[in-house]
Image (cartoon, rainbow, N blue to C red; front, side):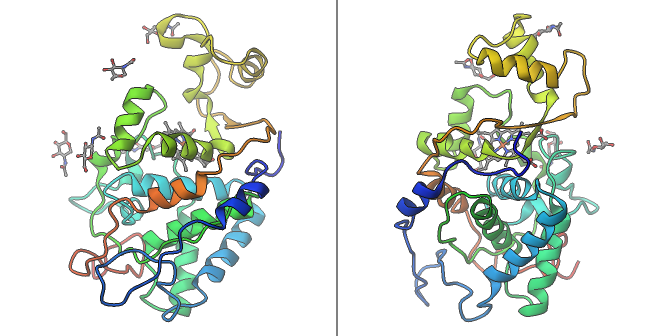
Length: 293
Ligand code: HEM
Ligand SMILES: *[C@@H]1O[C@H](CO)[C@@H](O)[C@H](O)[C@H]1NC(C)=O
Ligand SMILES: *[C@@H]1O[C@H](CO)[C@@H](O)[C@H](O)[C@H]1NC(C)=O
Ligand SMILES: *[C@@H]1O[C@H](CO)[C@@H](O)[C@H](O)[C@H]1NC(C)=O
Ligand SMILES: *[C@@H]1O[C@H](CO)[C@@H](O)[C@H](O)[C@H]1NC(C)=O
Ligand SMILES: *[C@@H]1O[C@H](CO)[C@@H](O)[C@H](O)[C@H]1NC(C)=O
């Protein structure tokens, strides 16, 4: 098992991806995301995030995987608006507490640390939604994956959508349902496949694989499409009546293939319904709370 989780052989992909779209901020033009959004207001934003992430990685080698998943779970619910980061308040239950996230989504204290460092350097400037987008890119890059120009300029929304997070793609969803959930957000099959490559690092609890090991589609048999030696390996790690929360590497192999479209699909995912209208959003000073609450 890899001691240090990494993206697979992405060096070649990095060269290809250097060509990925470089959007430019057009002051006064219709609001859109752009790479140089913070160039004047917080020029060191990227490096500040990177430093906090590298520090966090010293004591938690899983953190990069966990952070990219936060961006995904943020963007798929109400768009990339930092909604996932809000804590529960009376009258509004946090997305963090929904089944797809509770006991599973992690890395929130590191996001807080990034926010604190950015508030020190440039108070009230960098949104929590953008922090997740930047952290996702840095996490992939520091894990040996491709790099891309992160589009920025999202504002933070003011609500957390617990019910919406119940519709996040689930490990039990079939292909049709996954395609529906992605296309609903203007992500196509290429995005679905490429972004699923996000599982080239990170960990998964046994409870999400035992059905395929022992009772696929209620057949009381393993999933016949599972590679047999991988199935044997996983069966040892996740015995039939073992602890459901035991962890495994999502991808234990060292295969050479990497989806060259991963970076473009990450950009596509980061474009899901961003809030850019100041009447609809804000830059939170604390990612867990709406300003003034
Ligand atoms: C296609 C639909 C998807 C499904 C059904 C899905 C499902 C899951 C599940 C069940 C886990 C394990 C959670 C746990 O054991 O607590 C997981 C982990 C993870 N997912 Fe996904 N996922 C999907 C898409 C994505 C996307 C789009 C990304 C990022 C681009 C992503 C990145 C990750 C990462 C990095 C982890 C490991 C997190 C960690 O170790 O903390 N997933 N996913
Ligand atoms: C979240 O998980 C914790 C620990 O498993 C559990 O005690 C709590 O009830 C869960 N919260 C919700 C809202 O389900
Ligand atoms: C969430 O869904 C539940 C059950 O359908 C419903 O009772 C509740 O009003 C919904 N909450 C919001 C904020 O829409
Ligand atoms: C996929 O799952 C949905 C919802 O459970 C179900 O309605 C549909 O029949 C399934 N499709 C296939 C091809 O299995
Ligand atoms: C599609 O997105 C809308 C919000 O834009 C949401 O209300 C709906 O539940 C989504 N449908 C699916 C299948 O996820
Ligand atoms: C296998 O799955 C089916 C359908 O989900 C379920 O009814 C059955 O109880 C499961 N069998 C075992 C041994 O868990």
